[in-house]
Each structure stands twice: as C-alpha cells, then as structure tokens.
Length: 592
Image (cartoon, rainbow, N blue to C red; front, top):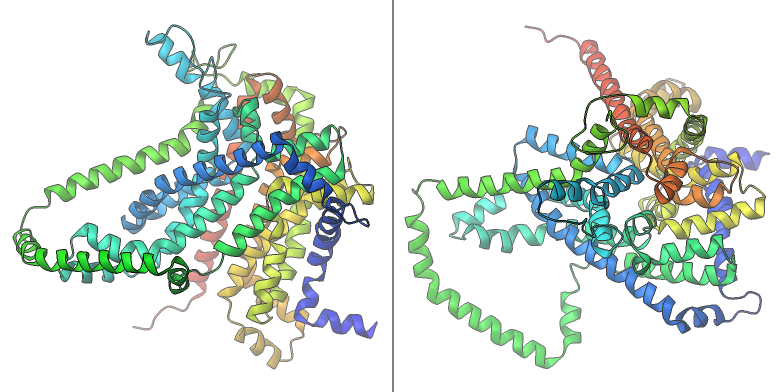
C-alpha cells in the first residue's frame, strides 16, 4: 500500500491510468498481433512469404504506396504556395485564412467524402451542369476511378500539409529576406537561397504526415474508387470481415506498419547534418562533377554581377505594378484552394435544404423536409443518440486520463517526456486500419466486441493522445512557480492543483475534451470493426447507406456532421472571450 502511494506521488504515477488503458487495449494486442504474424511459438516467416508470394498482394501494396506518394506530392505542390501566401498576408487576414483551413480539417471526413459523391456522381453537380449546358450528351465517368480517389484524398489531407508549413514559416525571421534583397539578390534568388531552406522542416513534416496518413486511408478508396483502386487498408478490412485468418491479417498489417515505422524513423529525424555523409557515399566521380558545376556557377555569377547590379539599381524607383500583378495572382490562388476545401461542404449544406424529391443544384426551393425525415426516422435518431452517448463517455474518460498523463509528463525529463509522449501518440500516428485490427484483437480477448464498453475503450485510446497534446501545450506556458508559492503557504498537492493549476489550464482541458468528443463522434474505421452488428453509430449508418443507396436524407446527416465542429468552435471561442474579459476586469486600473 505504501508503495502504491509513493508511485502515485511521482510524476509518472499520474500517467498510469492512460498507459494502463493504452497497454491493455492497444499495446499488448500489437505484440500478440506481431507474434501471430510469425506463427508463434513456431516462429516462421511463412505468412510474410505468402503475402509477398501472391502477385495481387504485391500489386495492392505498390498501388497503396503509389497513390500515397502522388497525393502527397500534389498536396505539397498546392500546400506550399498556399502556406507561403498565408504567412505573407497581414495578421488579421492570416488568422482568418488559418481558421478557414482548420475548419475542413475538423469537419467529418465521411461527410466530405459524401460531398464528393454528390459532386462527381453520374447525376452529380458537374455532370448535371455539363448536360444542361449541352457540352456533353451522357454523364462523364468522374467517379469510381483513380482520379476521384486523388481528388478526395487531396481534399482530406491538404490541411494536414498546410498547417505544419505555416507553423514553420511563421518562425522564419523576415529580416533575412530583406537583408538578401539589400545585398542585390532578386526576389526569386532570395526565396530560393534563404526562405526555402529554412522552410524545409515544415515541408518534411507535412509530407511525412500526409504520406503516413494516406497509407491508412480506407473510406475514400472504397467510396470514390473502383475495384482497381483498392488500397492495403481495404484489403485488410475485407480479410477481417470474410476469412478472419489472423496470422495472414497480422502479416499484411505489419507490412503496412513496417513501412510507416521506417518512414518515421528515417524522415522523422533531423537530416540537416547529413550532407557530408551523403557526399561521402556518392563517390569520387560525383564529388568531381559537383566541383565542376560549382566552379562554372561561380564563374557565371562573377561575369553577370555587373549586369545584375545595374538591373537592380534601375528597378529601385520603379512603380510596383508587377508586384500588384503577383499579388492578384496569389490572392486568386488562395481563393481557389479555399474554394476546393470549403465548397463541397457548403454545397451539401445548401442542398440539404432542397425542396425537391431528389438532390439537385440549383435547388427548386428551400425546405426542411430532409431534416424532418432524419428526426422522424428512429434508425437515424437512434444512431445519433448512440454517437452522442459514446462521444460523451469517451470525452470524460480521455480527458481525465489524458490530463493526468500530460500533467505527469510535464514534470519528467525531456528525454522521458519525448519517448512517453511518442508512445501515447502511437495510435494517432500509425495507419488507422493497423490500430483498428490491433484494438479488435485486444477487445476480442476481453470479450468486448459488439459492446458499448469496447467502443468506448477503443475510441479512448485514440482520444487520449489528442488530449495529451492539447493539455501539454497549455502546460508549456504554465509557470510552475505559482505551485511552489502555493506549497510554501502550506497548500497540499490536491489543493494546489484544484485552486492554482486547474483554473489556469482549464481552457486546454476543455479544448481537449471537445476534440476527444469530435474524434469519437466521427470515427468510422475502428467502429466498423468493433461494433459488430449490434451497435450502429451515426457515421457507421451513413457509411453503410453511402455504399448502398443515395437517400437525400444523407445530405441532412452530412450537414449535421459538418456543423457539429463549427458549433464547438463557437462555444470554445465564447468561453475564451468570456475568460479574457474576466481577466481584464480583474486587473487593477493603472494609476494616473
């Protein structure tokens, strides 16, 4: 008993509930899954040999990596200039643009996938518009192909690429660009030689996150792609629902997991100091070639210096007409990107108020008939109530365990904190289908498949990582000397936490709870494996209906899923504004 009290008093003791849930529901099952892939206790590579021995499996694996690479490349090509233009804008405009990029990131991915079904379908917006204009005589094949998969995946993953780039670019000292310009560098040269190298960490982070997330995509290839566009996640999910050969499923899952871990291990490190080593590996011939090209470049630079100097001086006092032209081009580009991110959601919300008997744009009139149909259908309202119930319980469990873990980790050394935070974030980083299969195996051993408790535990494993990140960010700005002052006044640990620490980190806790709820409310991959046939959440019912029929009621459901995050953001902003107003009112007025 005394040992347990001592353990609870240590910083890591506070993280025990979170790591206990993580270990039982995810950690131990991952180990068992790996052992199953090796046919333990016989330990052989037969399952991996069988996986790579089948040409169809290898084709799906290569296709998964190809689709992920293409989507990542497109997202970076679109995201980098968007992030650059956002950072270059004034502060009010930049904040507005960041909010507009974050909104689709928080919106239900399943609802946005349904939006693209409505836009790209045979009777969707684009085909109907082209038919009415007389440009085509029959619907174009815009859906159930590779192009539709690329569009849907880029739409989902683009905010994940933009936000890390914006974060890194905001930390770049703008005076460096001004210094380069003052020394005669043209705008393009200053950008390539100064800004671009400093922004590469953001490009690396965004690209890595995009590629890893794309490896685990399940919904979009299934909803927008054809039979030839399946990814490894779809293959693993189909194996779970049909054959349930756990050793083969484990082998396929760990092939995907091995690729993810390899990428995180290599590209997740700081590669800024690897140039010397790479040069040594390239050999003497390449070093000689580099010296030749470097010498030629220096010679060309010296010969063109007088001409560039004269050109730079002649442009000093010219009107900024070309600058305004580039500003208009940049503004147009950002508007197009934001339209790509926001238009599908806005379209579905608008079409959900259609007065017609089917979805169409423009609508024949405005009506609430599809919302009425939703709330009068017990199958929809029952699924909504189950999702709210599960999301609320998950928010409570994840917030308590995640807050305690974040508070305990904040008092450990940086190395311990970094390692343990990575462990608790593993379910958020690894491909969703791998996490889902591991959790399925863990809950199967506990007899919780198809139960409300099992779904809550499964969702909590993912939601805890979100809470830890948000609360840890709040604790990073917390002054621990306030706790020391309270202790010096004979306040106990519990009283210090409730009267000093908790009120100051409350915004982070509330934010973590909200995002934990949203994470649970929108989940489809884990729920589809854990729920069985007894529990049907709102996203799960919407997903089943998308695959079988296109009822206009689904537009109302998708609109509700899109509006839930916006509602919570408004609530969080109102609470933040109220807290800020109270803080200002509590401050003493300055003495004249």
